[in-house]
Length: 339
Image 1 (cartoon, helix red, strand yellow):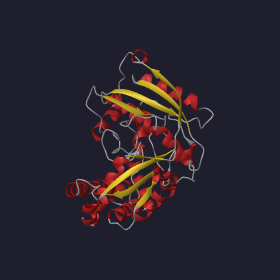
Image 2 (tube, rainbow, N blue to C red; image 1 turned 120 degrees about the vertical axis):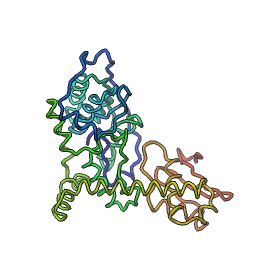
Image 3 (cartoon, rainbow, N blue to C red; image 1 turned 90 degrees about the horizontal axis):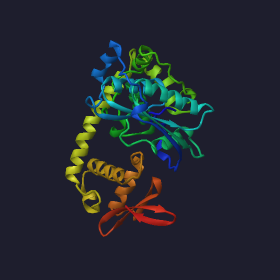
Image 4 (cartoon, rainbow, N blue to C red; image 1 turned 45 degrees about the horizontal axis):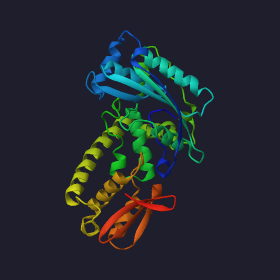
């Protein structure tokens, strides 16, 4: 598990309330005084990155692995004012030392540093629980070190989950994923070029997790069958599907500006109605949740059409129809709270 937020096939079923233990920050006065210089092979990668303009602030999730360390290095090389955040899940005996190592690297490159320790609640699916705990303390606009290889894995994982076009569109390039056009081999080269020894997380090699099996087994098999590297193909497919999904979302917004209007929803073309409901439910979700499942969207459409009076959703939410409108409420402590 690394600080970039990789997800597993079952993450969307998770609900958790992790505890935050401690925060350790280092101000600009504790950073290195001299700006670092970077090899040409590092700077050459910036043309394929999506960092904000020189001088703008960016917060990077840095686990200490090669991808997140390359994110930190490239953000500094791009001239950004960088804050590195390391989340210590407390899952390994030497996790505190790992946080110190990341802090030392941040100082070397002139970045501010903050370390946060969280408690991962007990339960099934450790990878998903750790991810939820991490996301609970990271800023919503934090930059992560996802690469093109992660994008390909995400597409295949979502395909195995039965995702639609939006899921198969993967992650959106931009400030949240500024190195999404780089390959994993290139992040390793960045670390080598600046003399960094990345930390290794044994969870990334654990075959119990779907993403690891996709990385280790499925992607090489696809490449062998196709006779070529399929990672760029899957990334390009994600780009195409994202553009088409955006277009359909725009159409749905125009056709159904008020998705809670049950009568309009029931009368709309099914493709647009599904997208409108999906967007509406995502907007009403709390925290860092996943988009609603296909089954949940269909259940809400049944409520809109009068085929059922109400339906329960993940996260303790409930959708019901009243006076021709759909309403979402959240059940907390036995009480229903309108959204």
